[in-house]
Length: 96
Image 1 (cartoon, rainbow, N blue to C red):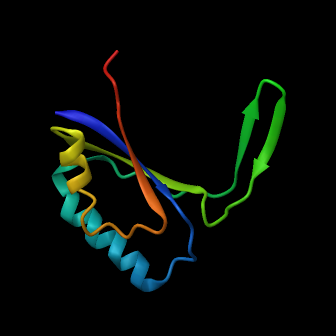
Image 2 (tube, helix red, strand yellow; image 1 turned 90 degrees about the vertical axis):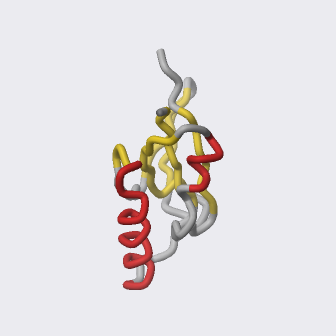
């Protein structure tokens, strides 16, 4: 099995319905979950020329989780039922 990181984009104030949808999705993914992650709040971007604060916006990266799956397609199937706010990007964690 390979590891895949889901990066969640988009922010809405969490309602009880959204929180329930997340809990239901975590339960459904169950044995594939490696790290259920955490939600993100404000952040900072650091470059070679300086830094800037990153506010929490509708298009911000707002959380992550890591799952086990056989392929990128299988990882994507695990997103069924996920309460996607804006989008989720999936990246395979390459072996080193």
